[in-house]
Image 1 (cartoon, protein in one colour):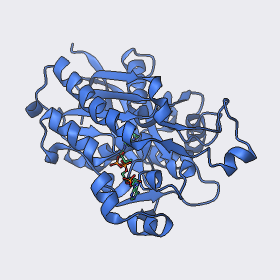
Image 2: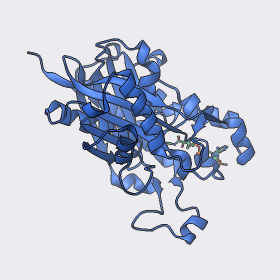
Image 3: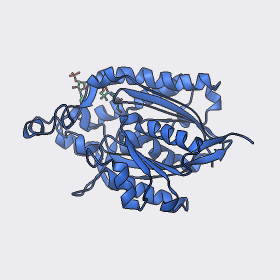
Image 4: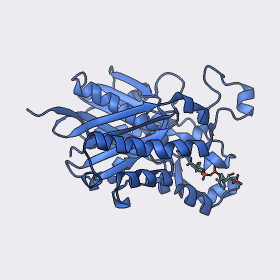
Length: 328
Ligand code: UT7
């Protein structure tokens, strides 16, 4: 009998209705459409509006759609992992809240905080449980309400990020599924991308709020320098160690932070743009949600056996790649 592998057997996503365009941002900060498009590739992003709405609302919407689409009962799920940096609260885990909202009870559920690489970390973790036979049906959610931690008077960050969620079902399959994963981190890089206040080192206070220290801080130039090499390196590494050439790979599924970082990764993999999933122009950087949102948008174009390379780089620093064969 061939080896059972953890495979993605369904994908769904949720994107809020409100579209924040570059034109609207031009009214908020000193920026322009030409700068944003040429430096990042972003034209618009989605924003979750509504008092009391959080990351779990988007995650729960994606999970409900996923359960319905895959004809799965909530009672069949035995693990749910949520990758996010914008959890509803410091605790409990947003995964717990999503489970409650969709009626998944008495299961293992927890969050993973690996910023833009969170979905790859969470998928790899779920896959390990499923391949070990510990859990049969796992859901991995990548969800972020980045608008909740963005300073809309800071032009260097507010043009980049958007809100959204994606969710995949993970089950064991013969022949197809996740074949390899590489996860890496370098905590020294935290100085270039972090949130200064709101954690145990600098708890939220009137002063931290007045000074805007709960917003995303990013030294874009330095993050770019690392991202552009590390994401290409890790994609090349996973191809090399699995004996893959560019012509073997059907799709690159990259984290959507900057079109120039994605282009550099594709060039290194020797993949034409037509085989790169890119929707950054519509959604910007939704942090943990970018990769499942891409899989959802391209799902109809995927064929059983297609070889996909998922790759990411983000805060931490964290980066990684997953090589999988599409299972349906
Ligand atoms: O997913 C998490 C990981 N994050 C990333 O991967 C992001 C990595 N970094 C980047 O994608 C890029 O560094 C940015 C898109 C954030 C910035 O692009 P850049 O080409 O590195 O620009 P820069 O920061 O070097 O800024 C160039 C100029 C500066 O003006 P001066 O100093 O040259 O006069 C900025 O002040 O562009 C200015 N600038 C802007 N101008 C218009 C910065 N933001 C804006 C803006 N509109 N929104």
